[in-house]
Image (cartoon, rainbow, N blue to C red):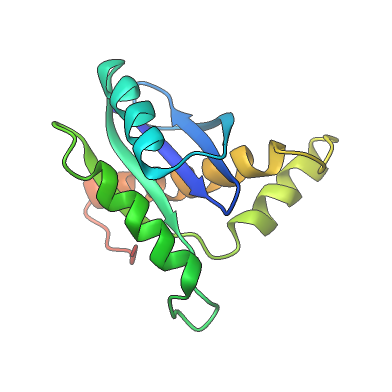
Length: 144
């Protein structure tokens, strides 16, 4: 099952996509200045291309509380929730940007620009994919 990962920020949305088997997440692109309606159109196009799940990073504080950005993220999630045949999942994204920067640094890639946003989306999506694989193996883990 192909899945899409989204890291929704104030100005940009990082996007990642899984392989068709749903095993690995890869950074795809960064969308600039998209409102909820534009994101909906984007996701509808991806659903037409075979995406069955959209995993959206939910920004929580280290104490697990939701702030203003979490409220905005939930609004974006609601805008795509009723797209037919797609599962929308909110996923705890704590420390995803830290992990994204670590991965890019280890790969010798620049931390400037929008690469971090797409990489963070891949971190979020990969965590979901691994959780889903564990669930299928009968193990339990907490998501969001």
